[in-house]
Image 1 (cartoon, rainbow, N blue to C red):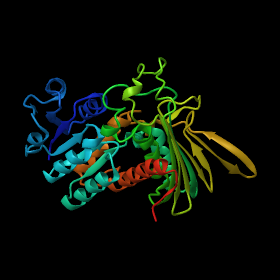
Image 2 (cartoon, rainbow, N blue to C red; image 1 turned 90 degrees about the vertical axis):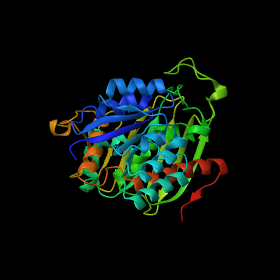
Image 3 (tube, helix red, strand yellow; image 1 turned 30 degrees about the vertical axis):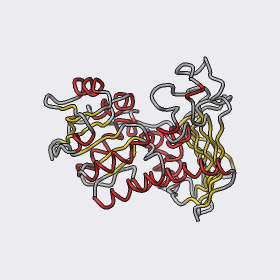
Length: 356
């Protein structure tokens, strides 16, 4: 296969900000199919990124019925991820779906099961795995440099950065707020670094303390409290079957100066590491405590320097061309989804949720 024909379902902000420009840099890819609920957006995307014979389709199914499309990217609201991804795989397409995997864990499991049955590749767009600092730290973990990582913190804290466009504030469409939107990235990083996907219990809390107030200082303008139907912050303690603990913190609006997004802190038996203010490793050596600032060399920045989205796209296309397992597997993303849902359930019930 000399060229991979990719179809884009959903031609909004995430497609233009991430998927289109990344795919356009890959010689083996051509964008031949577009669908959006706004025909105008679909046409604009085709004119900017499509091949001369690219088509704008009138429905998702019409696009999926095109046998010339081998790969589909799903960039739609969370409540449509499962329906579209499953239909695409049933139609013989490989699927890269935007995060989170789905609105519910039941839908995510259906996606995983269809991928297993059809043999189609399914990956979820956790692009933060492809940052240079993430790749360096993941390699250090795999090499055993931190020892057993038994405590991790997953950071996804914004002070005032509530997304006020699209359906981000709509619980019915999205399933949740900052937890399912940005907390999912931090949790994915933590589990990936630890290589631990076996949760035992989850204790979570969610809040709507600032959502009702509005904020003129918000990064993307004041929000309408009446339309803000999701949480403004969420926190959780996740214990794993191995005995390890993961602390997860997420917010779109919180009175704090300690802000970090898609970052992790790891504590192991040999050393610790964190991404707060740069990449650092700490530990004890010959009777002395040390802290090392890690400055990444050129080998970590070749081929798409500092562009995690392009690296993600290249790895995804490589997995298809060479029949390899995607870097982000559907099984891993399913566990992330199950934990997120357990946090919401725990918060609603006021008690821990058990996986055993």
